[in-house]
Image (cartoon, rainbow, N blue to C red; front, side, top):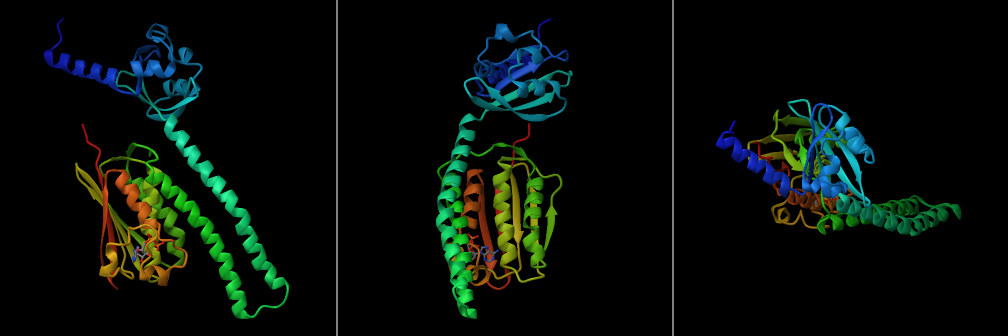
Amino acid sequence: MREEPEADASRAQYEFWLRATSDGVIVADPAGLVVSINPAGLAMLGQSAEQIIGQPAERIFDKHPGLVNLFKRTGEQTLDVRLPRRRLAVGVGNTLADGGRMVILQDVTERRNLDERRDSLIDAISHDLKNPINAINGFAELVGKFGDLNEQQQRFIDRIDQTSTRLYLQIKRMVDLAWLEAGMPLEHRPLQLRDVIERAIAEAEPVAHEREIIIATALQDPLPLVMGDPARLQQAIYNLLHNAVIYSQPQQVIVIHSWGDEQDVYCSVADRGAGIPDDEIDLIFARLYRGRSGMEMDASGGGLGLTMTRIIIKRHGGDIWVSSNLGTGSQFTFVLPAMAEN
Ligand code: ADP
């Protein structure tokens, strides 16, 4: 029987998508036999359609245990899949309405390589810095061993110790920032901002607890999904929360609020702390800028937190801004594009 024209059109669209996408798409029937694989999938696996179609997925992909697992499991699963020629894909598998499985493979080789290079650069710099910094700390300690220090001398020695450790951490942060600015690829997957916010709150909880500050939440449920890198977005939100905590007075409340519609997802972090003077508002997102409150209230910051947060949000196609009044508090708000529903 002839299919309806509409069914024809959507099949043609589906086939075009399968042909044109750079992701590998493999479908198996409920018995586990491969029924289709697109050109990108064949290229990734270095096999031909004749070798694969009609074969049991578990046997034909036995050189790729990650892929076999994606076909064996039920529900949605994400696993790394090693490909020939030392390439790597992230595979997402899901069960179809008829009980078969569909697996989508995304080649992440370049991104992972860059991640590894960044980590090894950070390791190398950290390692090279560790020796001189240990020497500074060691000599600072030695001073006390060659005679009693008065209170002020001891304070100076402690400052040398703290400053050298900060220097080390600051350089690590600057390397990370430089990579991000240089366009290091980010993860790009659907995620629920609510989960990311909750993880950032858990990360900020110890500093908040120390200052007896309560972090209250008002999170729309459900929030539309966004596409992004969960670890980087957590870092962006953590930076805002951390600032809100350190620029608040003890026992104040911070509120993190998130809401959205079909187009955008918003998140704001509001505190009732020091606030930001008008003449600093345009400067605080700049690299290494530390405001007057920054210098007064927090010895550990290095003026990179907001720069990092802004780059992360911008790299997700979003924007961030602040409204603040000196002495009554600040509210940082960012917006990310919501994932289109279909
Ligand atoms: P740091 O906090 O390490 O100084 P940031 O880049 O995170 O660096 O912030 C830059 C400056 O912006 C801070 O020095 C501070 O003056 C100001 N600032 C940031 N967040 C807040 C806040 N929640 N309340 C008041 N001032 C803030």
